[in-house]
Image 1 (cartoon, rainbow, N blue to C red):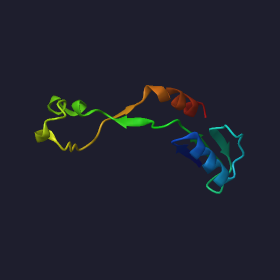
Image 2: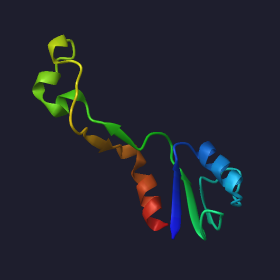
Image 3: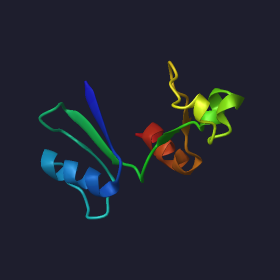
Image 4: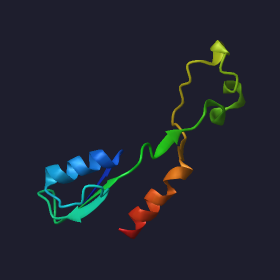
Length: 97
């Protein structure tokens, strides 16, 4: 079994690495090794949010006018998420691991 820990920020990832006893360089944002969790623990530090919720108009054109209080609040059974283009490198690194 393996454990993958994704931290929102590199500093947070390094704190997890320290706490779990994984050796790393001061600026590293990826570390892999054996911890008490399992033999293969990987910690990766992202650079901020990885996904965002879609804008209201993605749920219907009636939500495009955000000053129309008749349509608010927006309650939906499931929310649409979008992967940010700026974090594509993160997922590429994740695939290589």
